[in-house]
Image (cartoon, rainbow, N blue to C red; front, side, top):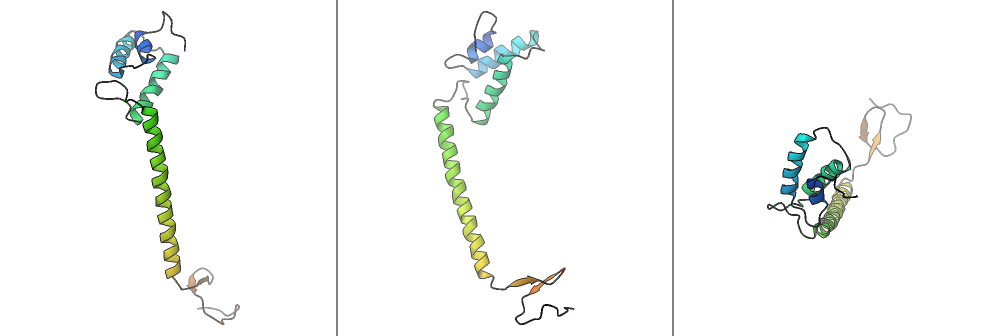
Length: 127
């Protein structure tokens, strides 16, 4: 992204080292009143940056960004993967447990299901 004299103040602040998003939003709001139809790289970047920060709780109350946000997101995602693996493992255990406690063999007898009966001829009609 090239920052030059045409770049709005809000965009310069957004691309800065430690932007205050409250101030960026205030400057953007004032700028957009005079430029309501402008959609460019800066406005798209603000839209995506805002969504990224909001969805990851990346803005502190004072408007500045949370320190080490990338590290915190990585750690959160790793914890989620571990928790998800535990959940899946428990679900598999429960599924196997249910299957082993159900000793009844079921077989299809046409449109319905019935108990498997030993020594029944295949062509025997069932009523």
